[in-house]
Image 1: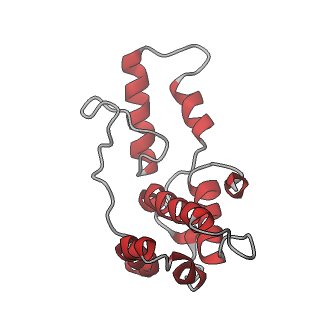
Image 2 (image 1 turned 90 degrees about the vertical axis):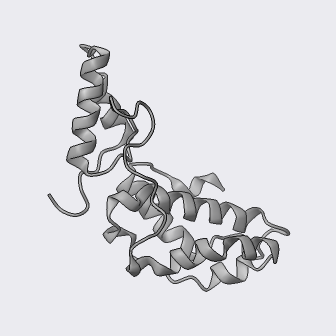
Length: 157
């Protein structure tokens, strides 16, 4: 299996868990655990005997070194928000290759980039160009579509 794991849309995950013939609750949990184990992540949902609806994998707190620009963004976020310097900081963010992001980091990346993009858009006066910087938008779109099977990420604005 590649380091990117198995990419399934949420609908594919639901179709496997709740097929037309319907599984018993026990069978659904077993199937969910198998799918998540095969994928190497829990991006499609948390479901297990040991943790119920909570994640089995501890929350991810840092990205790999290749994505250190996102780690720095997370570290500086409180300051950037309080000082209203978030936009200028995000305007200089590099466009990182989200295609190579290991899938276990996809939910954290979607949350960090999505939250930051929303704050960028809504903080203070509207941005002059009315667009999200490529350093946020490009990887956020890739993560949502490629890693998480969510289409149309930019339509939120």
